[in-house]
Length: 356
Image (cartoon, rainbow, N blue to C red):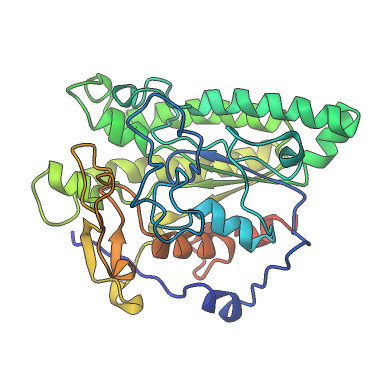
């Protein structure tokens, strides 16, 4: 299967085309909390003993502050979503967030993080989803102190936006590494997807019990189309078997959203369908290089420090061997916020979620 990708609009055009106009100083929610992996990490891994950190050039070459720990050339999905819901400043990482910051939200994302605690252990330190939830509990306690009571905190937090972008590493740095992890020997792809979603469900209940009521769950992208997997399988096109395994997880995640919405009637969960968003003709927006990284990568699949990347980054789908360019992040965040197709978000997009 060839790599397929379509970007229908790019900021700032998107803001006009979709009637999305962030009003600085008047965000649509009082705070925004983000959980996940390297797709949203904006600095939490910088001081960890890990191979999964990118606070060096050429990362951040198109970001105003340069290399900050973002695993791309510019903004992340989180950065763009924050702008779309009206925040003037970027949501700070937990590692550096102050007491003044946390009232408007925190980013807990960590490169190499997974749903499973052992995921990515060969990379070194990382903040798993379970650890991110523990960090969030600390923040919730601080917010309760700031607002005067837990009841006041619960009312406040219930109006905030929560996004979770996690699960890719549970495949890339776990199930698809049989030389290190036993999971592929213990579970069929269907069984592994079920085990992952069951654990994810319990973790999301913890998030709910800490006040979250507006929660967007991002499905996994076509991992089999990353340069890393294409290289591993020694092919030039997407690895169908990998994408099929990932789709099993996505299908179960959509059912989980239905289950939560039936059981937790005071909350609203939505599913962001990355497969739908990343489908179509890449030529529509000028993407030409679909299966090679923009930067020169090391054996880890991350950019080599200090080496000049490609000049025309807008025509590349991938920044390094795993992570998309800012152009692709704009597509993903924009269509997650304001769905172009009915299949982009279920049962609603983030724009409607924040109005609930």
